[in-house]
Amino acid sequence: MKKSLSYQAIVRAKLLKWFLVRAKRNAKFIFKKPPAMKLIGLMCVRNEDWILGASLPALLMWADEVVVLDHCSADRTKDILAAVSRQHPGRVHLLEERCDVWNETRLRQRLLEKGRRLGGTCFAVIDADEILTAHLLSYIRKKASGLKPGQALMLPWIQVWDSLTTYRDDETRHSDWHIPLVFADNASIEHKNIKAGYFLHTRIPGGVTLMPSMKIQSDGGILHFWCTPRKRCAAKHAWYKMNEAVLFPFKTNNEIEISYSFRDFSISPPLSVMPDEWYAPYAPLLNAIDLNAESWHEQECKRLWRQYGAEKFRGLSLYGIPQEMWQDAVNPAGS
Image (cartoon, rainbow, N blue to C red; front, side):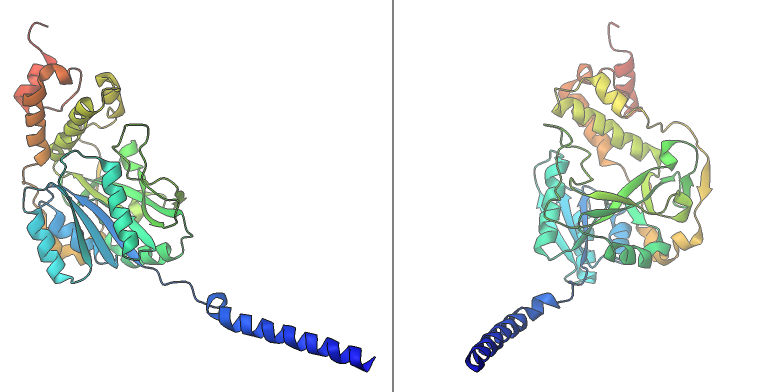
């Protein structure tokens, strides 16, 4: 009996020793704290010298690092990127794309993959003509740190209209847009084509779960400077339409026109003045925004028109960009 008990005690002692050794070996995994959040901004740019000197430093106020992909810029964009990089050493990482086709899916995926190699745990997808309202600078990091892998934080997309301090405030969808700004990464997230062969408007990556935040734009959100002035935005959307007509033979011009039909730049909608708190920390940056700079989209519209001719774009409303070509489009010879 004593021998049996002694044997059992020895077995228990060995099992306990084995358990303690394994527990010690794995303690760093069992009790390891989750990694600290590293929030990396992802920004595509092309000829954005009119606003990049404001939007990139503003992004660096709340992102740990930023990856910028320069897509065939021919203005002062490269100089601005170099200057901001010198001001924030080690925080701005540059990629370059020389193919002039705007394959948004591929470009945004390149940004995400670079951000992952830099150790990002959360990513902010933001364009050069967008700036977070300043009173949310601390809020955004707190909310981002609370996201679970795969979740994306939604914010109001505030349409800055006609001036730097007014925004569209009416009953249309322009005043009720929300977009995902920050998402917590997981392996399943990637930018995908909306449908086979269509690689535009893929800002929202596949695999994210959208988490609504603030409900109304008066609470703040992302300032979108697309209609300052309106001619810039009109030129951009005319280019989108013409680009689709050239790149996607499976879409008719009528289908293209319908997909952009809700964007009306000719009206003068009700506007609200932004609260000072939305802008205060950005005051030194505002001088870097040049509302009078010529839009590269307008020059591209002219080039596409010359290259493909009026018939290619028949039925597309091009917002008078440029006016003489627009008149040819709506009143083609022999019609």
